[in-house]
Length: 269
Ligand SMILES: [Fe+2]
Figure 1 (tube, rainbow, N blue to C red):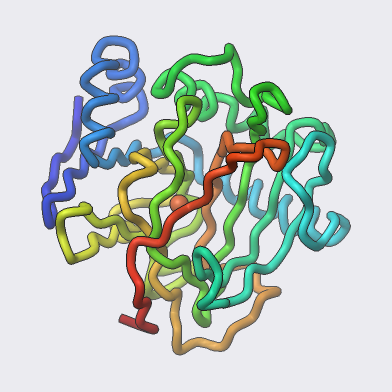
Figure 2 (tube, rainbow, N blue to C red; figure 1 turned 90 degrees about the vertical axis):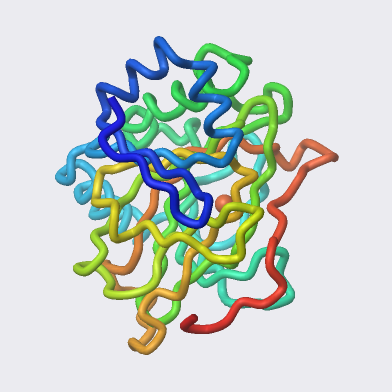
């Protein structure tokens, strides 16, 4: 049962509990796929416990002390690593993010087992090309990874864009991993119906442990997180998000990249 349905600026938002969403998957799959393709966005409340998500955040910060730092090709066997995406207006998608990248072959951690269900949901809502996409490596030139984005207070952001839609990944799933009003006070995730000018901000409607599901073709971004605060890239707060991804590897020659959907990104809008 959908708990709340909203329509803001033509963006349909459906807020639903976990059990009802699983029932949707089992009984109304075609409807669900059509709905997401038509730019409706789902918020599934309390998919994970707040305690689990906060413990994962803590573990990631600990791991980053010893993880590789830098930029590594997306190929079999690459290490788990972290890097800072610094603001660069000429970049394909401009952003300021501390990002952590995890791969299933680095079996020193349990992140993939914690988010196994999300890969299964992605698979069900896509084309069922494999039994468990979280195990994917170079098969069909696609690689599974879990990306953790930490948008720092003091101006963390992600320019509005759309992501590639592929046969193995027709939905985007993001785990909400911070609390609006506690970890940061302004800015945050938004989506925009492609036929509308105005963004719809969602962080005030979500809490730690919720997940968001939407089409990669739905324009989305993250508005500046507390742009007037001091930037501290070593802080543990800010806006956190866990994103299970199935992406084209760097083996694939026709790798598609996200596309920016707006030319101007105004600070603190
Ligand atoms: Fe995206």
